[in-house]
Image (cartoon, rainbow, N blue to C red; front, side, top):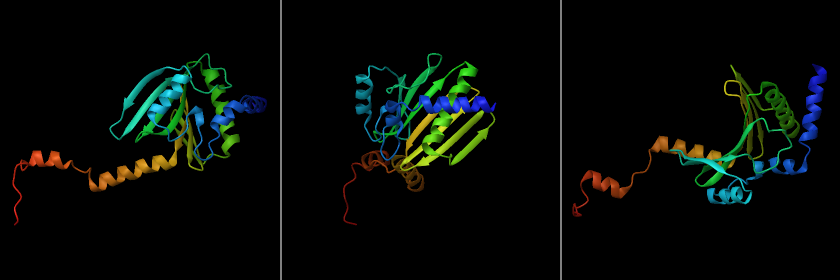
Length: 209
């Protein structure tokens, strides 16, 4: 068991020493994990995807000013053997600015999935140090790191065989949270024209008293 752990750790350090990948996952400040710079618009992200000859497989609109794009594969070249897996990149935009990027890997090969998870966890630990938070609930496990302006979450789910690494740009995420709190406390501002029409006083003349 000790030899196996040592081998996996060594393999992870070797595989992820690739400069091209480290350049992309260097999350200091407003970095560009997975090949997308935080803060870019949805249109700019689509141009990056097009230039990389990748395919957008899904887009969605959330009721809380969130837009998402799902990309088949990755923009950056990962130094991992992923032929046995379904790999996607998920981009999340708030107010038309990229707020988070996620690497999503799904595999039904249990042994290879466990090996990949060990490599990813070791790599993130080497890069960011000891996780700030660790969560284990039934078949779900998550490790979280907090670095300047960035929250990194590594999670695994045995129920759906999904492994995910999510990079969240905290300044933009905090703006989203603050706005949601404000709207809950104050209520969403009404459209004056719409309110006038619904109240039926759109034709009422102004009165001095």
